[in-house]
Amino acid sequence: MRKTLASLLLCSSLLVPACNKKDASRVERQEPATPTTMTASDVAAAPPEGEAPPVEEKAAAPSRLATGVAQAAHSDSGEQYKDWGTNPWVEAEKDRLSTFAADVDTASYTLARRKLVEGALPAPAAVRVEEFVNYFTYAFPAPAAGSPFSVVMDAAPSPLHPGRHILRVGVATKAKAAFERKPANLVFLVDVSGSMRGPDRLGLAKQALRILTENLIDGDTVSLVTYAGSTRVVLPPTGMEHRQRILEALEDLEAGGSTGMASGIDLAYQQAAQTLRPGTVSRVIVLSDGDANVGPHTHEEILSLIAGRVKEGVTLSTIGFGTGNYKDATMEQLANKGNGNNYYIDSLSAAKKVFSEQLGATLEVVAKDVKLQVEFDPKLVARYRLVGYENRDIADNDFRDDRVDAGEIGAGHQVTALYELELTPTGKRANASLGTVRIRHKEPRGEQATEAAFPMVGEPHHSFENAPADLRFAFATAAFADVLRGSEDSEHWSLAQIRDLASAAAGDDPDRREMVSLIDKAMAITGRTATR
Image (cartoon, rainbow, N blue to C red; front, side, top):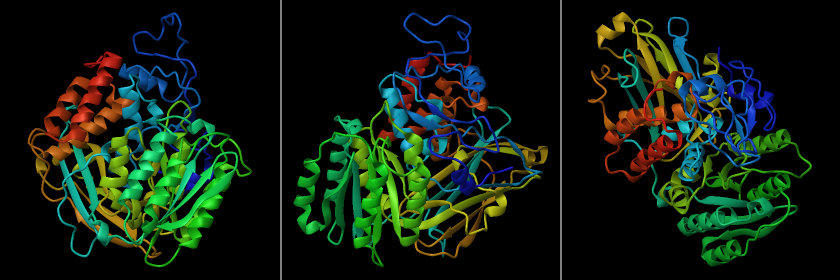
């Protein structure tokens, strides 16, 4: 029933349709070059003057029509996303196990935020629910004894669908202060091609790297490599005693030319190899719009190169910039193969969040190949749906196969997953624990995995209103993302109600209040305030 992450990476290239057991019709979408708008009520109507007819999308169109949410009116051409579809409902009696890899990326949320702020909806395929949920910070207890992980598992009745419950599964690691983390040897691989010209692209990338450089400490080093039509080493490995030299090199970067990403990655790894040593972190950080248009290597060859370097101890993260030609699927797969993180920077505040506030988590992996497996009690749970993590799905029988690649978690990272549940008659009466989550992981440089089980403590909350604010906000966030991507299960959900749920759980947290404002923007764009 489930595919493995490894098979997806083998059977799909970055720019062609993916093979997919759940839905053979899913493809990577190119955003239309002309603006389009589509709602449930006007599909049959002639397009307004100046607009093109709706673009037919075989897999997603029925559910998007059902939601009544208008497709974003994109003027962008050449944006590329991968449609992973949505997880199906699963009968617990037939399959009580739900298995997936950890994911701490947040690019989907910040990219969607930029679109909404600019007055357009994100492309449905650009919305990954887990990256919306994991953008926010939640409260966790201290890690369990003998484990690097803190775990939360709680449930409450659904406020959007009577008769269903919401289950939250949260996993976190302890944050590290700057003096506690390992020395970091970083290679900044900066795309300076013509497509990166502009203040929100190379200009913002330079600001982001200045923030990162200012937050590095003694013992860290930085190399600077650029690529366009050709590649060059702007700065060899340089310690923080020469911080000003690094900042000056960043300031001198200018954009122009075509994009030879593969040769840039080759050269970046050569620089990383010079500082690779035990007890340190070695990471390549790619800053780009993902648009690789020249070079001798195919995307599959680039992925193979990255995977080989990971085995040597060099990880790779991707930082995305710009819109109009942004290659989201490329950036995500590069980071996945590189055992790193995929972020999208839409503002200076986003750069500060990634490279200052969360720097320890961004730089240092504390657990690799992290797999989560939730086991439901079929006597209590009739069926379940994992909301998100479609591209992190792992076959149940691969949970204990340590050859299967999974996700990485940094120091201070959090992973939260939401399920919709339908309980059995016994489950509705029992007021008991609904299941257990097992976590399997390896040490950062280890090959042998360890496993720990964490049963749900206590019974579901009797009402959603009395559930913890973190559970309520996480669900509101997941519901908002589910509506944006046109999930069939969200077709009758009210954005106004979701906004109220988010607002009630947001408190004074500025990030949470901002998401409430984004729901307002989505409502204004679509005119959807209630179920249609």
